[in-house]
Amino acid sequence: MSDNVETRESEPSTRDRILIAAATMVSEDPGTRLSVRAVAARAGVSTGSLRHFFPTQRALMDEVAAGITGLVANKNDIEDTTVPAEGRLLACMQQVLSATGTGEQARDTWRRTFGTYLSSELNADAIDTYNALSAAGLRHIEHWLDVLEEEGALPPGDNAQRAAYLNVVLDGLSVARALPAEVARVRSEADVLQHAISLLFRTAAPMPAGGSD
Image (cartoon, rainbow, N blue to C red; front, side, top):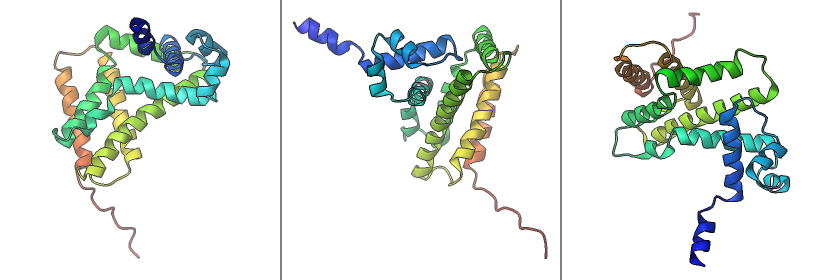
């Protein structure tokens, strides 16, 4: 009896099964359409059960994107105050970058990305998936910055704009990982990230005054 109870408790909930199924479908094909019927069938649940947890396709896609992003970057690391603020932000960004892999793994990642979003005509499902994943990634970075600003470690500023800036830096370094490079690349990555981060921690200079009267 106790073994059966333990087994039931260790099984994923219906909600988790839905998210796992949807995330698996996206990982297999980033341009896939997360229709209610398709995801419910993959999860082995009824469409009614799926709609109970996720009334709309957008709600499901947003939750899946947030979950995938969360696997790449742990939000809790930014809250470890035993580590200096800039070091925490660097570690979080390195976590994201490491998900790309290196060499052939990085090339495969970008081949799939380009194949889905650049080399063929985009459909609405691919656009929705990309936008959801992109927005979830930006929210993650913005959360890191919000935490540091609330601590007083990061000067006040537009964290949405700062997150977009850091995201561009990560994208560039991620692409570079797929290209032929020397062993010194990893050291160069850390230097680039540290420089990008250091700019955020500098007190912003006053904007120049307007034209003379």
